[in-house]
Amino acid sequence: ASLSWRSRARGSLLLAACADAIGSVFEGHRGLDPEAVAAAVDRPKVPLQWTDDTAQMLVLAEHLAAQEGRIDMDALAAAFGAAWAAEPSRGYGPGAVTMLAQIAAGTPWQSAARAVFDGAGSLGNGAAMRVAPIGLLPGRNLDDVAAAAVTSALVSHVHPEGIDGAVAQALAVAIAANTPGTERPQANEFIEQITARTATAAFAADLQAVPSLIDGPASAIGERFRCDATALGAVPASIAVFLRHPDDPRAAIKEAIGLGGDTDTIAAMTAGICGAYCGEDAVPASWTAVLEQAARVLAAADGIAGP
Ligand code: R7I
Ligand code: MG
Ligand code: MG
Ligand code: MG
Image (cartoon, rainbow, N blue to C red):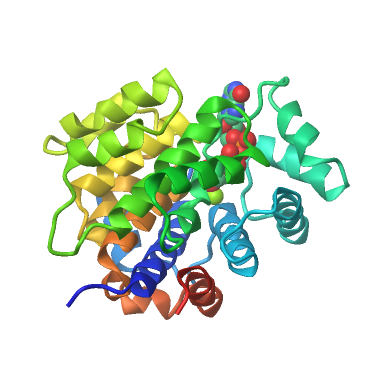
């Protein structure tokens, strides 16, 4: 039977939220013990409490649902600011805190987003980590997805690499959601569809390295990419792990966390792509049962996927 769009949206948001929670225990650590990672995935710490990645992903999904798939940049920026102000201890990045505090205090996002990192704007992975809902809007072609990803990024991440991270991750989710479950995603084609729509030479080069990392050892991913809180360091690595384990979210999440570094975010982005490909039935029921605000995650998915 073919997967419904709703099942794919639910699978993506649920797995992203679960992986964020499971991966957050290891964020910032390097040289992780594979057995400790496997234990954390197979017997996670209960309840599954997610971080800023999922907090912002839910804000974006709920915004899109309320606006019938459109983005009102002023309202979206205000909603991110309000979510941070309500729960500032979700593990936000330092640039994000500076920017969201300004937005919450009434500074226009146009100046707040541009001011961080000495005026360069953030190249962090924050615009990418929250973007899955854009790849899950029904009836969009890949150019539409890329354009909406740019718009969603600009309220906080104006550096070209911060934007490219959101474009690449949104496209990965969209391509996965449009791949029939009977077909395995093909790495070269998957990457070409993304690089046709990213803007920077850095993203083109790193994404083009991904197909060579599908069959070798996982350690080669950690050697090629920084696996840190930057967009360039995290997004190509996440796509690589997905392409290695498209229909096995547990294996994908173990491998993503095992890279070390930005473990919640890389695991969440990897899992968000897996869920778009596999659908809701691939989410371990034992995880959903202990996931913080699981009903809200499901409602957010249904809100963007439609009936
Ligand atoms: O992008 P952002 O929201 O961070 C997301 C990360 C994820 O790991 C979450 O789980 C959470 O832990 O934070 O927040 P930013 O602070 O804007 O960017 C993240 C990091 O990217 C920063 O702390 C910097 O290390 C790095 N970074 C930059 N470094 C140098 N120059 C971002 N922009 C720059 C830059 O211009
Ligand atoms: Mg986080
Ligand atoms: Mg953090
Ligand atoms: Mg993180």
